[in-house]
Length: 77
Image (cartoon, rainbow, N blue to C red; front, side, top):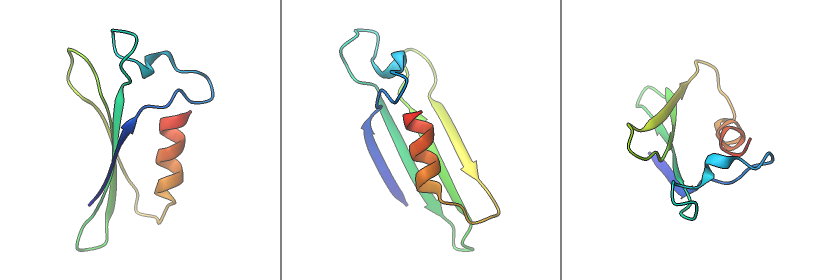
């Protein structure tokens, strides 16, 4: 399993939800990759939220994909 934890970037359009309610603390994201023994691959993106359950996106596909570029685009755009 590979995991990246970082601040959520503003992206090209200057996303307003990159900061927590205090307006100063950066919101975090976690991007992870899980490869099962049978070579199936799952990718997970989780965004930090306040006072709510976690916001999580689980991606899987039967085809080989460039998951790094897909996850990067989701987080930045």
